[in-house]
Image (cartoon, rainbow, N blue to C red; front, top):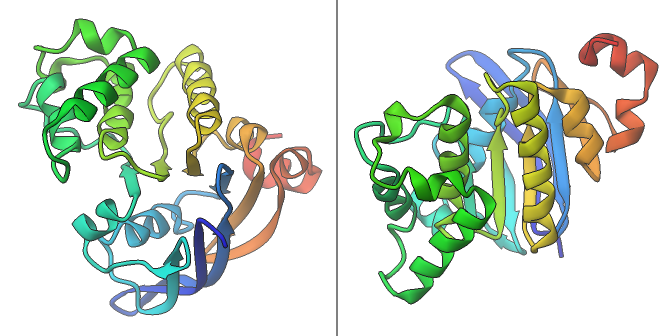
Length: 235
């Protein structure tokens, strides 16, 4: 049984057929990447899985059961999205953003334990607890966005362009953190502008263009494919 299974997914924006019948799966504790050019439909896939955009066709199952339609129900079933450009509650503090991530959970000791786990992943956040998130650096905001999603205690984490706007050193640190999160039992779907690094850490990858998959395969195999490198990876 797959952690997530998507069959014949279609999404329309009016007359625009943004996602055209794609199918893919995630097995437990896998990292799977979707890469492609701007406008290919990558973020639409992520927002659809998170319940923000309505699919016009196809089916999605999470651990063998139909994925609910509403975002809060999807989070409750164990799927959390870290959206592109973070979308933090900028007027709220770091602590308040983390608590918002756990809004479906009862306030108990386990919430505090998970907050401490986030601080183990990103120690700087503990120093910024009372700071408004809108005043954090780009890297710190991304750390907080990931942590906020982890506070919902997901089984599957969707990461939409997590390295956007980050310095190369921070990107490398972020990729290492994604691997660490997976090693602790998380399943990860990654959409990433930095396609080379995304594929290098992925078990499998999919190339998306104009709403359709052009190719799929092991992540490092795709990263080393001359045609893929020329078209998408700047090689």
